[in-house]
Amino acid sequence: MSAPLVLFRRVAKSYDGRTQAVAPLDLAVAEGEFLTLLGPSGSGKTTTLMMLAGFEEPSSGEILLEGKVITRVPPHRRGIGVVFQNYALFPHMSVAENLAFPLEMRRLPRAEREARIARALAMVRMEGLADRRPAQLSGGQQQRVALARALIFSPRLVLMDEPLGALDRQLREQLQLEIKALHARLGVTILYVTHDQGEALTMSDRIAVFRTGRVEQLGTPREIYDRPATAFVAGFIGENNLIPVEVLGQEGAFARCRLPGGAEVLAAAAHPPGPALLVLRPERILLGGDLPNRLFATVRNAVFLGDQTRLVVALGETTLTVKLPHRAGEHAVAPGERIALGFAPDAALLLPAEEGR
Image 1 (cartoon, rainbow, N blue to C red):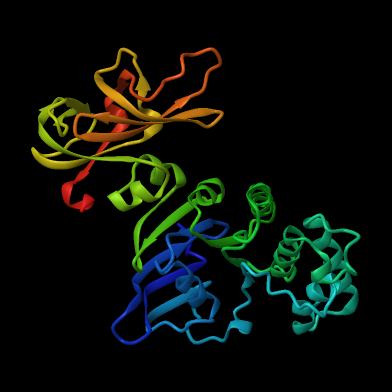
Image 2: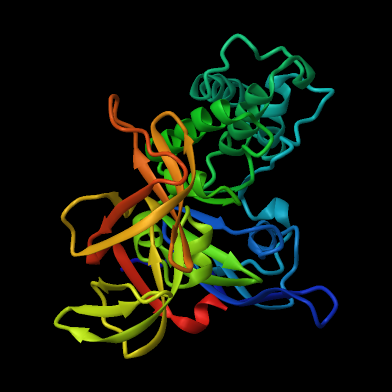
């Protein structure tokens, strides 16, 4: 396997000698990869990105870029493109002048600068707007300019810190796809910071889920979603039902589990007898059906969301969230109704009980 483009070796950050923003981190980023650092506010993801950009200095450890230690190299000498949430465009400069700035700093000839500016404007569909100032552009247009400026000097690595956070949902989703398409076309390596799980799942080759300065799990979007390693990841990525259960024993490839209230279900997992946490996605629970795990529950709440109905149901002492796909003409489930639910054993995941505390 080829050497990674970026390598964090035991990189840590502490601001007062006691509060650790980032615990010792080992992380490798492959050439051409789209890696997202995902987590809630204060989890260490942005600090990690800023240390790579050179705007924060690690308290310990080393950062390597293309096999060379850059931990003490100033930001302007790292050759990294950076896109910020607030765009960071120069308000007194036109779009073309903003794009020209990083090229002028690198002393590129005027003819080459103009050619690159024209290509960059076409790349982000901003032709004809070269003479406008940032204040004359929409938020989406400003972010396109910021993206073009980060790419215009052909860096091998681009860092993006919540670049779509200030945009409305529809525009944010549109730009997610545009950034992903640019990544595929240009082959540039991207490190992307967000707290938006949907954004991370849509755009990433891999996701590093951060919590309190540590990476809880690193994997592909499908791995993170289908096989969360901890209760935190299970709860942070999409919706999940986290149910404390007692594992009674193994039945072949299945673990028999007792739910609060006494109902028993099978999970396609190996787990020693004793307390555990059963993880079950709301969309994996079906209404009725002839499934190995069949349960009866009372509907507490039902909300129609267009493409689906979101139910909150009581199953003895346990409350579950269920997402049912909408099908025209079907009976609408109502609060107070007694319903049969089912799920397949391979829909359930078991985690250690302490993960739920």
